[in-house]
Picture 1 (spheres, rainbow, N blue to C red):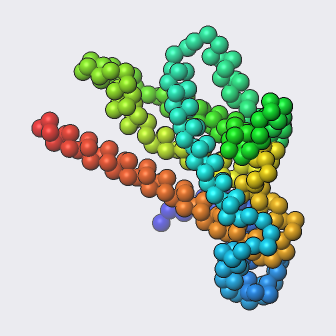
Picture 2: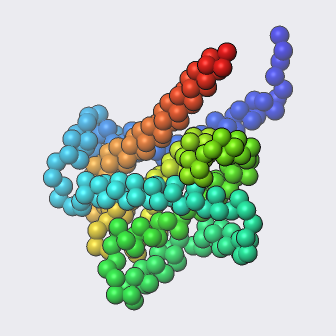
Amino acid sequence: METRPRSFYFLAAFFVLFLIFLYGPTITIAILSFQGPGGGLTFPMRGVSLHWFRDLFEKQAVGDIWGSFRRSLVLGVMVMITTVVVSVVGGLAFRKRFRGSTVLFYLIITSLVIPSILVSLGVGLIWSQSGLPVHWSTSGFGAQLTWTLPFGLLIMFAVFNRFDASYEEAARDLGASPWQTIRYVVLPIIAPSLIGVALFGFTLSYDEFARTLLTSGSYNTLPLEIFGMTTNVTTPVIFALGTLTTLFSFFVIGLFLLVVWWTDQRRTKHGSDAGKGTV
């Protein structure tokens, strides 16, 4: 029987510790959210129940939990769609060198290293000084795009760097127009990457705090609402909210993975059908 080297056990133990460090806080919050009606914000737990989850669906004395959730959801979808469209267009544009492309590339990357709170402050000032209302759907939307677009563009740059242009040449030889080539050849091939960009766009927007802090106006998104609740909520209801938010995040990730699987299955099926048709 082959024995494993000591390094394997050391690395395995290190990986377990990393997982505990990564998910320990979330698991702790999830456990505390199941406290009884008399429970507090710390251990030891006082009973076990679903009381605080039921309390979430009742009218809250403080905060606007479900209103902020709807705003974060709508904003996440807006950012996701915009990120996907702009990333694809930008990726197609950068396939050929043009004057100023290098400077433009570094300007895009710079947005990732500028402190988020400064971006939020700058966008908020631009809106207010321009006489425009500071609102989560306008200034907040713009501030979040400075965070999601660089990630989406970097993914698309990598995808198109590896893209085989012979597929497009074959489509054009068969009489396809440029739009038909993009729609029926390019987009289906890069579909899994588009789903990844969409997931990045939605999740980064959904839990973004700093870039939304000074650009959301008088209506909070969910991260801002949760932060506000930490100063005036002294019951495990905030832990219950955190647990449901985490479960929703996992649900979104699972949904995107399901779409990737469905896309892959559909592509495999069409490929096998095409192969049978040529026999």
